[in-house]
Structures are given as structure tokens and as C-alpha cells.
Length: 243
Length: 291
Image (cartoon, rainbow over all chains, first blue to last red):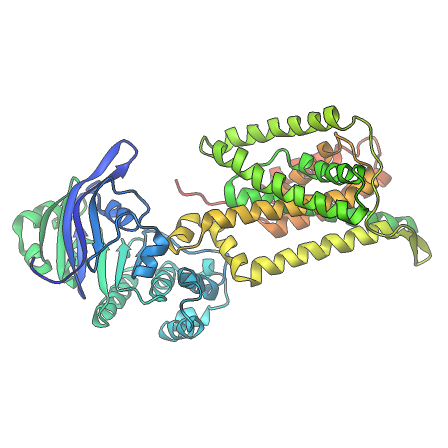
């Protein structure tokens, strides 16, 4: 692409047990932009995240963050290096309070971050809903509020790159708009976002770049508007979008 | 009426011990899906560690310390590394069956290498009794209750207020996400095994002076802790507390007011009733599992 990349995947091979899902996946994620990965079910979209974040072992290939090799690094090291990962579904600790849930986002920093308490307060100021329910059990939050909590928690260590998997799943249209709004706001602050989204059309509309993944290989990497305008892709992945 | 007070106090004391053992039981389940059918033997064993240390000539309190350390090393660390970790890779059920085998192994080892006879065990709380509302309450019961409650309060405060405690809760409630946040999940699981070892060792020190040290003494205790955990709610520490105390009271009161012969059956009736009408336990929460 010839642009400044924050994350680079080169010929990455990974999968579950005998099964290979990523089959030489190669792409760059531009810095300071929102990039969305689209592709049919089983293309390996979520597997990319798990492999980048050290939950699945990359059998071959290299992954670099800002030029530094992070292939198969542990989640803790990746958090220190400036990546956070927000998986799909519910990722809260239901019986801990909202405040304590957020606080756990700072564990990886150990004693390294001195102003954690201030950061938590700032995060709660930014999201009044979370402030109001700060001392309630996290299980009392609505789906959208839980997603907000996960994002806030992920931001506690000031990551340079956020991996977010299906942020819109199970949310009302209004909450989806709000969540996408938060991501746009992050981009304005210089944070890079890599997203997987089944709601491909809306996601691409707010993205700068798109990556089309098929059978664990990169088919297309382009500007998001170009992908939206591409008739082949429209038909394959965006059309009825039900498939 | 006076008799009732006595029964309630001794019921609370027994119940508090059941609660200690049941808390350990639920902690292991929550953090590592371990259903420890050897939990009763885990209570029987530390008393024998102490007796063995006494036999080589150590003074009582030194023997207690040795017994505690042996419990932490053998019933905490070794149990996890040698039995739980390898078996859990094969699933929850193979692990549960392995703990049944362990329970038989521990019982027969004590019988074979120590003694089949019941052994007297010194009390760590003062003997004697206290006159209260005109009735004599044994200090033993009061001491046992106070120590057990103190242990539970310390544990609860640790889990709720310390950062490590909350990381342990996080690791139990959602291990995948805990890992993603960089929480050392494996170390947190090891801590729960150490806490369980400390709880059973304390229970052992409290109950053995009352019921004597015998290789079979874990059988009823293990069952009681299992029932207490289910009655209270398997997935909650406070469930284990409620279950333990309820069971201790029911056990003591039923033996006097209903029938001594059916003493062993009444906790089982309670278990069946709870499973029928409130399967999540008295204060438990219905489990959600996504597959």
C-alpha cells in the first residue's frame, strides 16, 4: 500500500489443532486509521485477532507492531507493547463492580502506570452511564453499556492499536451508532483501529481501509470507499449481507 | 429451651467447619472445574501431619506449623501439579474420578502407614465451658465458631478488597478475558489451591479434637461439604457459607428433635429438596454456559 503501517502480517499460518485457518495471510494495517476486515464465515477474521494477540500460535510467518517483531508474544507483552484486544460477545466480569472491571484493564501495567486511579476517573467522566453505575455489578449493564465498559477498559493503558471483533453484535441500532462513534473519536486521537464486522457495509462506511479475507488469504486491501464501490465485492459480501 | 441454645451453638460450630470445607470446594470448582471428591480426606490428613510431627518430638505449636506447611505443599501445590493439571486436559469427569481414586488412596495410606485406630488430638481452643443464660456452653464450640468465622471474613475481605483477590475472581468468572487483560490466570488458580489447602488444614485442626483423628473421618465431612456447597449454591462462596451453617444446624437439631437414627439421612433429604425446588442453591445463581 506504500503507507505507514502500524501492524504487519507476513505469510502467517495458524489454526486450531490439525485445521489450518490462516494460510499465508499477509496485510498491513495503516497507522491512525480505521480498518475493517470483511469476508465470508470461516475466512479467518477472528482467527487473525487471536493469532495477533498470542492466543493462537502462529506456525509460520511474522507479525510486527511498529516494526518490532511480536510474533507469538504473550497477551501481557502485547498490552505493554500497546495493543488491546476486545473479543466478540460479552467480555466482562459479571460479579465485579463496573469500577473494578475497568481497573483490571490496568493489571498488565503492574506498577508501571502511576496515575491509574486518575485514568479510571477520567474514563468514568467520559461515560456518564458507567459513572452512574460505577459501584453496581457489571452484570446490571445493558449490552451496549457492557461494550462501552470493554472499550474503556481496553483504553486504560493508552494502546496505539485496538483489535475489536464484531462490536455491533447484539446491540440496538442506536448503540451501534454510539459504539462506532467512539471508534471514530479514537481515530481522531491517533489510535489505530482494526475491526472485524459482520455488518460489513456500515463498518466500511465509517472505515478508511478495508481488507477482504477469503479462506485465510488476503484477497483485496484497499481504501474502504473503493471496496464499497467494487461490484464484485458488493455482490459477494455486502449485497443482501444475509449470506 | 436451654438445651436448644446448646444445640444451636454446637450446630453453628459444626456448620462453620462445614462452611470452611465447602468454600474450598466451590473455589476449586470456580477456578479450575475441579470437583474434589477427596476434599473430606483433605480434612482428615492435616491432623495426621501434625500427629506425625508430634511423634518425632516437636512441641504442639511447631507441629501445627509443620502440618500447615505440609498441607500447603501436598494438598495445594502437589495436588494441582501432579493430579489436576494432567487430568483436566482430559476433561472434568476424568478429573472428578481421579479425585475419587485419590480419596481411596489417602484413606488406605493412613490406615496402612499410620494406624487404623482413632487417635486423640489436642485442642487448639481452650477446654472448659461458659455459663450463658444458665446453661453451660462448651468453650470448644465457641472457639471453633469464632476461628472459622474469622477465617471466612479474612478470606472474603482478601477476595473483595485486594487487587490479587479481584484478579482471582476475574480469573474464575471469565478466564479467557482475564488472560486477554494480562492477568496471570495460572498463578491465580494456584492461589486458590493454596487457599483450599489452608482452609482444609484449619478445618482439620478445629474438628479433629472433637471427632478424633481416624482414616475414615473424612468420609462424612467430604459428603457434608459437598451437600453444603450444593444446598447453598455451588458457584458462590457465600453459598458455601450459608449451606454449611444450614447443614450444621439441621444436622444437630434433627438428631435431637427428630431422630438420631435418621441423622445421616436428613442432610440428604435437604439435598434432594434443594435440587428439586431450587437447583441453583439457596443463594446461588443459575449457571450460564455458552458453548
